[in-house]
Amino acid sequence: MEWLVLSLLCVSMFGIAALAAWVRSLHMARRIDSAHLENLQQQIASLQKDLRFLAEQTAKRPAPVVGRIAPSEAPGNTPYAQAIELVRQGLAAAEVAARCGISRSEAELIVSLYRNNSPS
Image (tube, rainbow, N blue to C red):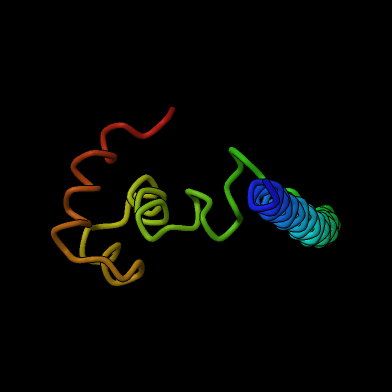
């Protein structure tokens, strides 16, 4: 009978030790989860700070102009627009090519397209 009581006592002690180890592992897991959660919260705070900085920097920049042409890109400033204007004034293809820096064949094409289509 003593043997049975000792066996039950050993099994109970083993069960208690196993239960204590399980509780300890849960406690460690909760600590790990807390540490992980704290790390995530720090990362979120850092990302929010970065986002605010980027928003401030973006707000300082001038808004892009959509649908407008910069003066250097305006149609009147291209060699071809200048060539059209010279052709409308009556200049020959050779003179247009020399003044605008385009090839003679390009100037001749512009002459053929725009000489007779001059606005009245």
